[in-house]
Amino acid sequence: MEIVQSLILGIVQGLTELLPISSSAHLNLIPWIFNWDIPESFDVALHFGTLLAIAIFFFKDWIALIKGGYRQVVKKEKSFEGKMFWYIVIATIPGGIIGFLLDHFVGDALNMPLLIAAALIIMGIILYIADKKAPNKTKYENMTFKQTFLIGLSQALAFIPGVSRSGVTMTAGRIMGVDRESTAKYSFMLSAPIVLGATLYKFKDFVFGMPFVVGVLSSFLVGLAVIKFLLKYLQKGSFKVFAVYRVVIGIAVIAIYFAKM
Image (cartoon, rainbow, N blue to C red; front, side):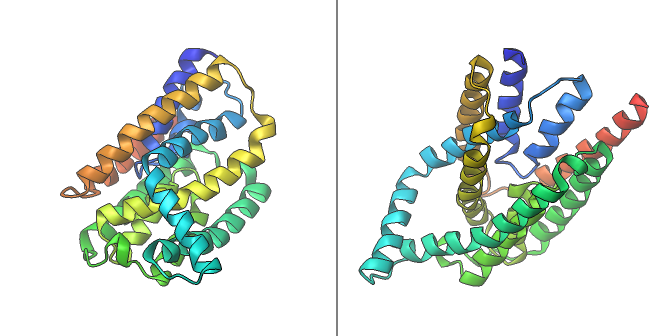
């Protein structure tokens, strides 16, 4: 694997994992378009880079959540941080189990360009409608157990390339009336446990070397910039631009597929 390839894929991962446009779609489609031979485990390695970005950017939040969760169980001290910590833990379980089982039994069977294109387009349309119609009535600090659990459950659909973990969780959040900035932040926080689990599960398959370092480092740095950008952008902007991008890319993939036949 060439360093240039790992750099490009790392940048793509940093951009697409944290924006609701599907990193799995882009990481499958780029090698397909350019006929690159990329190790299967490299996808998870790139996700580790964006996991580091989430961990560093929200470091103070994570420390507060972990302390709150501990105190709520051991010292019976109730707090928002304690509540949210256990919300994230519980919301991760069903999506993680379902996603693991589907990945185990389905594997790479869904990594087909036309299916990816369809997922990009369909989820783009759903994201647009949900974002346009939903009210901005719930902030991050006021999210309920029902909202956090259903958003976590929606992660199971992310095993389909093109759906997007951040895309489906942000869509679910908007459907339930969580404001844009809050649903993005919760989506980022919620992704960390599952990505960490996948990283540990696939760790034995990692091929360490310069391409690995370049890919992880580039996805980490770009991921940091994207988190900061998206949270600021969503204070006034909407998800419309990302929904339109998904549809355009989906149509382009269909055109490329038939052009390559």
